[in-house]
Image: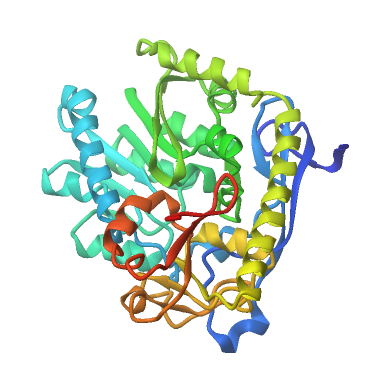
Length: 413
């Protein structure tokens, strides 16, 4: 496969190698009213790999204002599992890092509805939340969390330093991979970070995506999928280094990166261990990504054949959780309401609307057990345990779940 002639890496400006072409794709979180179908925005969803800095990335990304605005339909606090996740994280970070400082300042990039920062508010710790989507920012503000309804950039960084000082903690969850100008981001972090501060962020992990064929992690908001190798290469340019890392189960497999100024902390041996694992997997070479593209095509073929077979047998199929990730699956595989009756979801902002692109009806999760179906596709597989416990009655009368990765299969057989 040939390198692009007209597209360069967002990180190092090196020529990119094309990996996937998922075709025309709508905005993953743009759940839509029927009357607005004709105004729906589409873009070409393609991925590429940089052989210099080893960054896996989208070739192009829609304007950030199209993705993050006053109608952003994602609320972290709807998941009890995520509430526990962020409470435990706060306790860990305070004990092992923030407690060494007098009156530390913590800043979260992309604080959503305040699920993490409310722990700081409750414990009277200085904090700032940065959130560009006004609807979720207002929910956080209503919790008396200090929120700036802005995009994180160099101008905002200067404002924060002038009015609050340097940050002892800069944190982000599933946000850094959204920010296209990765160099501006790291430059701002380097400027804002206290000498002994830490930049801690967690994002979907490239290694898990490749190993488990989770191509649904690729959509408009996820302009990057990171590895230890690629983050290390970026850090070197800003006098920063990875001092620790943690593999997480969240979102189908994530990595939490602990970054500090070079030489300020001992580097945990896990960093080199996981980097070695990445090299063994082949994340530093294009071949593994070309194989990944073949696996994506295999998934598409298997998924379409499965749903077609169920349709031919007059079996009704629904979906559970209208996730942003499901947008990529449904549009890439061209799955319409011919094969999928509806998707049930707990987010009120999505209910009564239609899925992006394929326009499958979104219904309240309260109706899930009221409407008979033979099969249900579990789109939010990262919340599998929580969902199956909540909907434990679904399988009593013979209905079955469909798991997606690495290849679609029916469970409960």
